[in-house]
Length: 335
Ligand code: FES
Image (tube, rainbow, N blue to C red; front, side, top):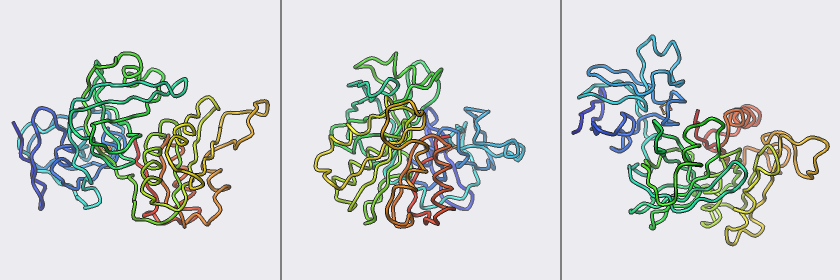
């Protein structure tokens, strides 16, 4: 069964009554519905319900402030229509999905330990894996409620392979389920792709990829694609981690064929002290980006993914400190 949704003064679309949120129904229909994280964290998908009824999946979602709640705002990624509805939201072409998201069953094909708290999971579905480098998908780990957003680390392929780098979150039910309970051959629901921080292959600027923690996956995907397509004269990869044991990008990048002198790799550790044997960069990754890059920063194309403090520090550095045009800055906010 499907519910009809009308956007006041604009398009209409349908939402599957069984499994779709308002946001996913809109994106599947190719509507440019504003959004970023798809999991209730960013507030980008706020809208007004004009007529009809909707269930709220996560009433305390941090994407809505108290003020938003008092004004009756809702989050499209946390709303499920109960019937036909009319809504008010301003859509924009920039949010139109580059690849229409689909919901499918995928089986775990391989699990590889990358660091003490990071694993690479490879899933296989029975239809081609279509996404752009840097995009993410929603995984529904078994025996947990709701979805978790993880970026793909591989490239679009006809064989139906989806690869993710998952970091264990202390006490996190989603990552624990994927680390400890999902066995080889077991299936889960995968929904995607989503996200706007994908490779702009038509830019001829040098590319800077900055990864923090499990933000590694989309940066690896972008590096793979940019180097394979010859989309950049040079790619600078910054890998921010706490300790040396947390670094794993170098091996992954070294395995990309034909990187040669096009690629520079800079690991930066934030939790080493004077007594540690570490000859590389120390401190916060955004400070090393500013120190290390030879050209004025407004001449690069930036991609980054990682924890919110890193994202905020980079936004301040690039947009305010160096006036990098926002069209050259690409990231998705997950919280
Ligand atoms: Fe809904 Fe982020 S897209 S809160």
